[in-house]
Length: 177
Ligand SMILES: Cc1cc2nc3c(=O)[nH]c(=O)nc-3n(C[C@H](O)[C@H](O)[C@H](O)COP(=O)(O)O)c2cc1C
Image 1 (cartoon, rainbow, N blue to C red):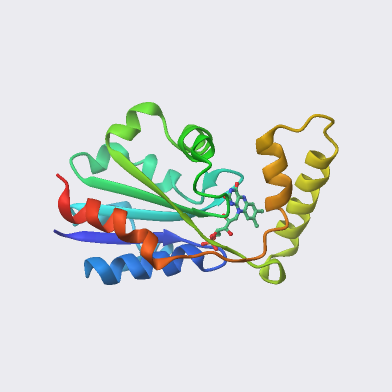
Image 2: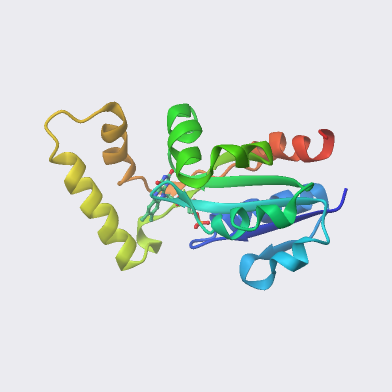
């Protein structure tokens, strides 16, 4: 197996997972800034990680826009976020629809992990965005369950990263196909 892990991170959570995965698979790991699509052609398995920001997997378009060049490779994407992992509608519908065209999922396997959000580390722009989102959601007369969850998540403060969670991804890379 000739694999590589690439990540894009704002606060370090996705990088931590990338390093854990690269240790388990004994493969190189790169910040997306330091690797090009041409470099990826040297690997059979490409694992890309990005944090979720308004359901978008940070930077994943760098990979999805070049999928045709990566035909035949095993491609894995992971997200890190603070939405509880049992919110499957969120991950399997909303996140999937925002980031991938349906046919891309024949080529890409997606995993989701819990990440980190420490309020005192956030940029002013991000703190303001969360405050605004919370205000909008809180103003709704009949918020849906998802909207109620979003209101709570705006105040999430902690590191929920879990090394054990990477097992399924690591097994998938090692064992299948
Ligand atoms: C402005 C903002 C928007 C976010 N949007 C989402 C989101 O849509 N879904 C989610 O689960 N987490 C969301 N998060 C939490 C981040 O995805 C989480 O902190 C992630 O681990 C960050 O990864 P990184 O530090 O590697 O960039 C958001 C955080 C911020 C600051």
